[in-house]
Image (cartoon, rainbow, N blue to C red; front, top):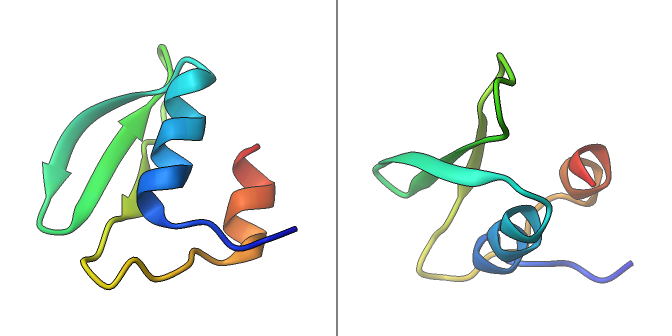
Length: 59
């Protein structure tokens, strides 16, 4: 599995019916329907890769 950036991961989540509910600094907060736990995704200018465990957990 290759690394993905925050922007790429947000695109994947949006394709799976997640939506950005708000932004806090460099983090986008995503929710899916009535899910009780929002998911923060870092989106930094350096386009740093997200941890593979985070990506696998949310897919």
